[in-house]
Image (cartoon, rainbow, N blue to C red; front, side, top):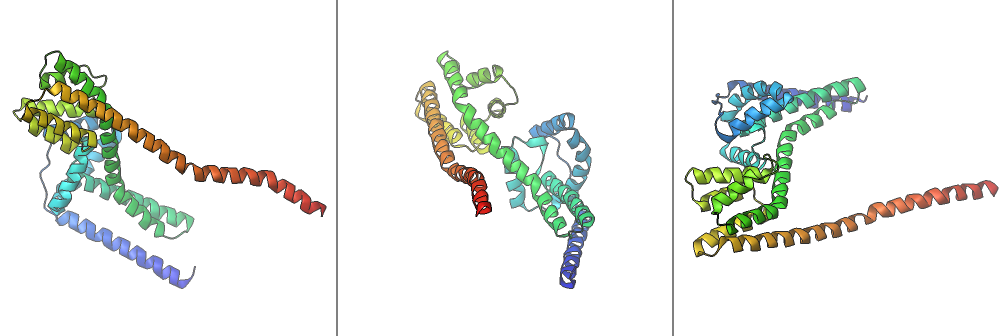
Length: 300
């Protein structure tokens, strides 16, 4: 190994351990924050501890780190992380501090794996830095991906649920009773849209107005179909138009939009398949032509 490369690896290793030491010092000197175990996130935390074995083993260490990281988060970062967690369905009852704690723990584990891999394969410790950075970003990426998938699931299930609400309204039920009927007759209680409707009904029962509860729904699930539904219901309430007719038109519009999006996605997939198909055709042609070329060369 050349001397400049050895010096570079030593510098990277020293910088890595210096940053780890500063992080440990910041954790130990940070003010402790009291844990919160109330509300929906507390319920989700208890579900996660019962159903996820790995989370039950990680949670004590995560909780200890969260109590010390709470004083280091800026209000902007805390609000951004809480918004992502909310849109992910309050996954595992995590808080903003818990996400940072999981990032720290994941970064240390991936960094240790990178150091071991670099030492055993003698490929240097640059892979440890890459693994450390990947481990630090992995919890946030997982939450962001869960939030995006959850919003898409709500978008897909919304037209059918609106149809059921229209049937309930046509039978003489009010808005809250129609929502209750949808929840009671849902196939799965853990579906994202059913969970959001349950939260909507709870907010109505706690005394919030329909407008406030619907705005919270649009905040938790910021999809285009959800926003249009919320705006349509609020306008119906303010203008006094029949809600059943408004919801029926909204369901039809959501289906048309979903059909258009499916056609656009299919058209994009066809375009994207051109390059792989071209490469596959070229590979097949090479497999057919190459033996002929080799045979001609041997003869001449």
